[in-house]
Length: 373
Image (cartoon, rainbow, N blue to C red; front, side, top):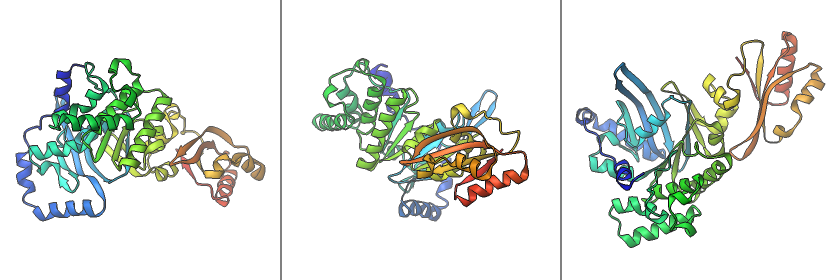
């Protein structure tokens, strides 16, 4: 990528055509103040209120987002997950107004972006860093000058920009390679540089759009660990856009699941994992390789094991105690919020009496379960 094309990509032009929306918004000044006050008082750094986005195409209107409501707490790691085409990337671009919502509002630090001037929106964007699946580094600049690039655009003095870039390269573990060029780096190292560049302007929020999708599992784990450290040490709110539930479980505090342009469900990661309320939630939790399990025939239970129970022979004990055979269709163990958590899909006996006996045993042991269809 050339410096000229990257310069165009990084310096976004504020779109036209929101004057009428601003005029309408001014008719309800008290409501706007109340919304902003609620955001600040309740610790929300970003609030999406009845937000929608529709694109016009040759074949008609395409609804990308419909009636999105989401509150993101300052200092949290918020996950947004969905299958391909669900609308998650459009959502993140609406958060920093790279895409202007067709309806609803985006509140940042208590203020509506739609009611800001162009200059104010540009300033708000500087407080929202962004990293992508493709790293978008300037190939003809070394690492140090890649990180100083947004500071140059912001008019920061050269010495101050250099010191800030050196500090950030040390944070991401690349201080000794500041003179290297992107072509000399691995994919994980390039993403570290992209993270350092996104942090250059000291943002309050870091938007991560499929930031680990192009990386191998080990490198993904390292990048997620770095993002968690940035969240904890710099108190930066992080919004993670992904199609991988493993990424959500590894780093996020809260998650919103998008399906067909809507938020299907949202809440703490552990709560969603233990008791998903929607079919898409269950499918995502099962994992990519198990979404096509046949739930149509027979009764099946999803059993969740917490902490110590995740490593206990629960099913063996169940079979011995109830003297009923249980068919295990799927099982795994993973880390959710630093705790070992297991899940299992089992097929119940055809006999209603025996099936109820299995359920009664699980209840007696305090093991969460739900019937899946």
